[in-house]
Length: 478
Ligand code: ADP
Image (cartoon, rainbow, N blue to C red; front, side, top):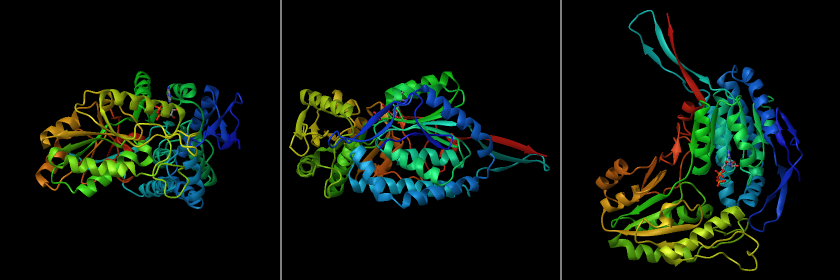
């Protein structure tokens, strides 16, 4: 089936009429077709968002929040169907896709609830007759650029706060997972969101992303994706005086100290390394393990890694599906070959060519042991089912290694030592810190974001999203 862009409340053909196949990473078969849009389509969408802003921004928070609730109801009616589409285009397992779809629904609920929360402060003045208060105003039409790894949840957690705080939206979802975004946009359409408030332009980032960032109608950009593209967007937006919110890569450390609960530490290492085929910016990729527990940890980790069921993500019992695309497949396999030159391969290390999986982008769950973090596989984000083990002799050495990276998204430690866990919270350079739970696992009511090169701009999610999606006015009322 052929899908269209959503502009000014209508599903419309791309202006030059081009379409591309949406491929299933399990077998490279076309699922459906989506527009290969051009800058002209972006211009139509940004003009619609600009026009709609005048009336949308004047509605009450609660009027805007009502639309989110209605959209959540439409999504709730077809969670299983949406999840099947998500799995078919992205490759994560069906239970994970159901979980993600439900999360998108909860995010819509959460931000409709934010519409009833306080959005300012009253501040005492030196003058008894003056009331000082703060109020929030929307920024204007915003551009949202989203990746493929959470193809419905990320659009939801950008669109929902954008709308409730009074902005209009042009979203460009990842070209690898358009159908998941389509479902969310369709739900907003069914909910009766006024024309032009939400616009969705499908297509390749390199073809249309720059037009969205450059558009004079677009006042701010929220982006999730690679550091490479995030940095290009930041440079461009800064020149144009636009605010940005960038969520990019990670090379997240998971530390296991000698006194850790080893069952739990291994379980989280497997889950955070290999679920979603390792394609999460919060995935655990560096397992930093203290010498006294290292051999036992390693034995259990390898046993469990070698028994993971890799296969069609729609099949019951599958633990890990394919990586998302040919580009990602090549990139992960190249990094694995690099790893074979500079580290010891302990598990996996190859593509999977069994008759049932050979048409898909399947890679074995892979474990390397590295002696030093100077090797390339320990420094670059791989974004695939690859983890590495590093042995250390102390807590201090572990934290030093954990921080020896350009990234700072998420970090975890497993220990029962309260003093060391508190020191970890203080000393580790990461925006999200876990004690006795893995690097993955974020809740939408809490701020999400990293330090160093992982993030830029105000945090996403939770109440803090108001900081990006609004500007503050301080009012002196005499
Ligand atoms: P990923 O590897 O996760 O796809 P990318 O950074 O390549 O990471 O893509 C994230 C999002 O950014 C996608 O929606 C993609 O289409 C978009 N994108 C890619 N190139 C550009 C660009 N030059 N300008 C704006 N957006 C882009």
